[in-house]
Each structure stands twice: as C-alpha cells, then as structure tokens.
Image (cartoon, rainbow, N blue to C red):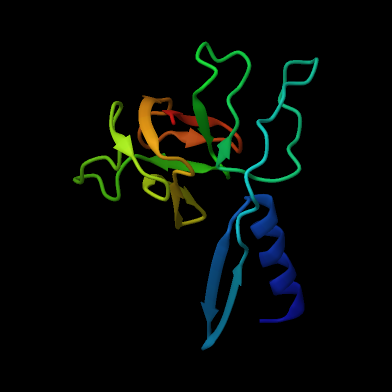
Length: 149
C-alpha cells in the first residue's frame, strides 16, 4: 500500500470512530488499532437542541439529567453503524431487559464497514431498557441501553 492509501484508510478510521481496522492486499497487511478512551461525561445538548460534539468517544456515559431515574447508566453507540442484539440471526440476544450483567460482558454488536465491533458493559448491573431495535442503524452517541448499576 502506498502512503496515499494508508492516509485514506486512517481518514475512514477517524470518520467512523473505529477502534480497529485491518486491510490485506497482495500479501501486504496493514492493521491500525486504537484503545478506546476512558469514559467521559454524557454529551450535553446545545441551545439549538442538537448534541454538542464530544471530545472523546465513550461507550458508557454518566446518567443524563432528563433521565427520570438519575442512577441509571446510559450505554451509547461509540460509532456509526448497524446495531445487532445477537451474534447471528438464529442466536439468542446477548442481553434482554431484566438481565443481570457484569462489567466487560458483551451487550451487542455494531457493524461498521463490514467489521463487527462488540460493545461491552463498563458497569455491573441490570439491563433496564434496550432502546434500539435489532438491525437498526445507529448514530455516534445514540443511547442503546439503560443499565441500573
């Protein structure tokens, strides 16, 4: 791969908020991996009603003010992609509402550019609500789950 192709790959990496990408062509392989940043506070809404840009991606955010139960943790989409509740169409969902989960447990998959990204829980607790339907497109920062720690 030449430098121009590698730069284009890195631009896609940043644009879609990917944590890992690997490309192999003609016996050459390029792998780029980034550790997810530490948890950051929830994205606050701007006066216009649209979310203010976050400085760092974070799959788990602090509880939002408009949440009726302030003790809930919102798991947000760390990237743009397609949300899947299970590893395959025939398989059971990773989690259901009411399930007790542990920190590090896989909650769902987000497919971005044909890469399957497992989204893990950053807290131990109970799944109160699944906010997204299976196979639905999701946006960066979109709430996916509500968890009671």
